[in-house]
Image (cartoon, rainbow, N blue to C red):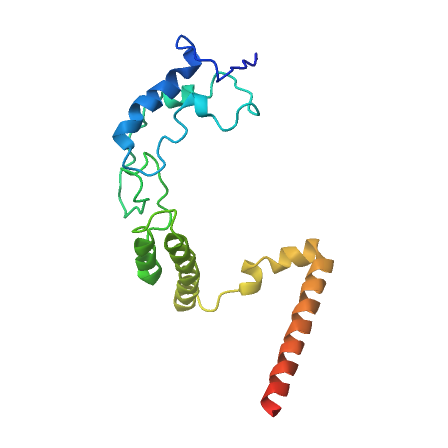
Length: 185
């Protein structure tokens, strides 16, 4: 396979490698309301030049036919910066419960906002607790050691397990000693 190196500083309108980028430049005005959209549309403002070696395929990816839309059968949360749902998406865990409410709240904010990401992290932690509660309701007590991979860890990394246990015991002992000493005063 032959590698084609293109000088992007060359202004050559007959160069087929720039067709996609020009199409992207022409599309930019209709999406101008989305902050940052089309920031890389200008091939003369390529931030990776001269580090990147172009193969000629770099801008061909812009000329593709959108795949058919996957049917929406559950609630799909997507960025408020995106005009529509992507053609294909995952539906493994639709939002539900308290964690689902927090996720819906998170997607009201832009992805550049810390509120968005902190809310998603909080929703993940709450979802974990909801899962444990659900396990306890349906199956009894979860086997935390097996689910955390302690069996495999012991089998393949005994030294690491012993080290983790010793550190945990030492930190716990120091914490207990500190709390006892503080309560005596």
